[in-house]
Length: 105
Image 1 (spheres, rainbow, N blue to C red):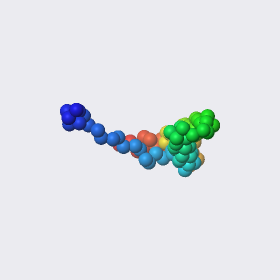
Image 2: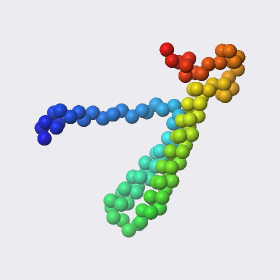
Image 3: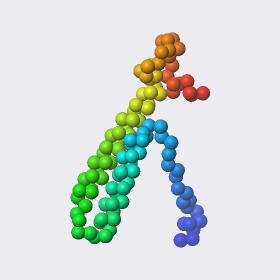
Image 4: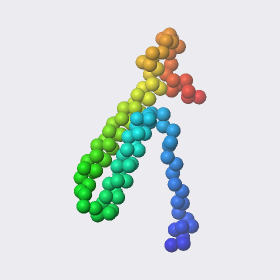
């Protein structure tokens, strides 16, 4: 057991907290999902009489909505980076260059 603790790293990975496509609306949905999940776990752990079917359905619906919203937002962000001419840019066609390539060294 001592060898496992000595030779296997137990460092946690960092999560990306600065994702530009995560909007305040998506953050609000994530908090709502987390609160719903905590409520569901407490209900199940306490063996309360109330069934958790409604909580399970609510949690599933929130997860699906978060996934849909974040995917749409991510693709809008990617399109903004790759195709700036669709974003109302007034540059001439000769100088129009995707932002992604302008940022790449």
